[in-house]
Length: 435
Ligand code: CA
Image (cartoon, rainbow, N blue to C red; front, side):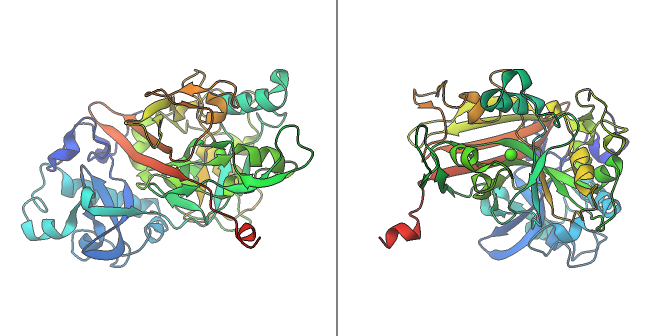
């Protein structure tokens, strides 16, 4: 797919040379938004990643360079900016692109302003970029749903009868969506061990990851007013990588009849840079053929899948290096994020700026393209051997899981950075301390 947007021109180079390396995640064509602090200035503010630097937009909004009111980027999240809508998003993207372009002297030659507005990523702490209002998680990979259905129900009828007609989802917890780098304690919950008459309360024994991409809703629809798939696409500001941590043994005991609850509520990790829909536009493509054809309200005029490469590594505490355990692509998803958003609003549900929509676990058809330990180890039956010799069926204490991804352009990458989290031992429940 090609676009007329000059900010997507593969030939663009920045005067910041670190941005021009072919494997850099943050070239001038990307310009993702994030929230950061520094030791010298602990106030959260909004910036754009460029090369190994951050362009501090809270500094630039105080100058004439960015045509926007003064308190949009001096904010602890990007919600205020997102609520201004696609026209303003495009204006700001064009201005930032022009300022960082190799041919532009304005910022390049202004030593004082450059010293204020550019922060090394190595000196910054990244935070949650968005104040997440509501978090909804879907189940949109046909390969993943087929694998799970094969394992837990019936290989001959792996997909539920509704699956090809409706984007399946559930309402998750916004309160425990955290930025990359946040440690996660192994969750506690009710488990019914095999052969046991009743449940016990204990630390999860089948702790898992789920490799997902999450759409971030930028603009809202009023309650009672449904939207088309194309309108839904316009409402999406951008995308992040999401690790939807899952406790499989808690899940299997609790999920009927209302779906996942505590098994998913303890943590969800996102990558800290929101990659804009505008930056991903050259990588947009049609998804798999949807057969049967979706009902009219779910039909899409354009393809809303993205050619976005993804990979996952695990590194045990004692291991010298990480092992890649999954390589897949977001393009395989059966239901697109705009279809999920349109479906979510179809009943009259109000979707708000800052809402997060998880795609569902992204699995491909190959054995090394599976986005969960559940599938990689086939529910524990086939342990994986990691580099260094350790084996895994599920995640152990001290393991660090890291997810990354990028859209590969001609000589540049639209990168997402990492969504990383380390698993710490379970905490002791307060009721047990009293005994
Ligand atoms: Ca999930």
